[in-house]
Image (cartoon, rainbow, N blue to C red):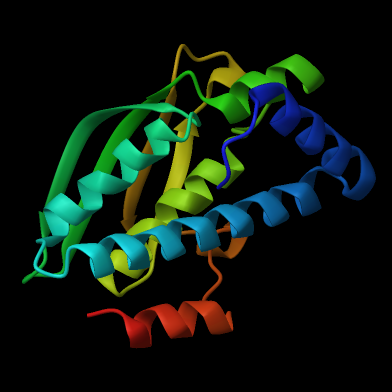
Length: 181
């Protein structure tokens, strides 16, 4: 990500939705977020090669907050690298995506933090070396007080067919898993 004013982000998002439609824009933002998260995980792991997965994972939400995208409040975090288990649940307060969606499109019937869920999925997937999918289960844009996300291994989600955050066929995805420890 690059730091930019929230209003500029909102204008770009509004224009993209208008030009290509909601579903295509969702796919573009989710994929962009996934790639940004995966790249950041690769950089973080490279910077701290002796870091444990838990510490390296917690750097992602903190860095995301510094970028001005969202304020993260962990609810539940379980990770056992040796057993291959992973589950996390968080609140996102002051989500820039939800705020800008509300400003330009009003209340939504679906969750709208596409780039952020893509980012979380890409970051965790690259860090753990397996596909991890985050989904937003509540969103400020749908009337909730905060956004709520859940992340777990892809195979634990029942209905991945509808998920836009699965770039498994992507060459970049393959590079991440072959390039990460």
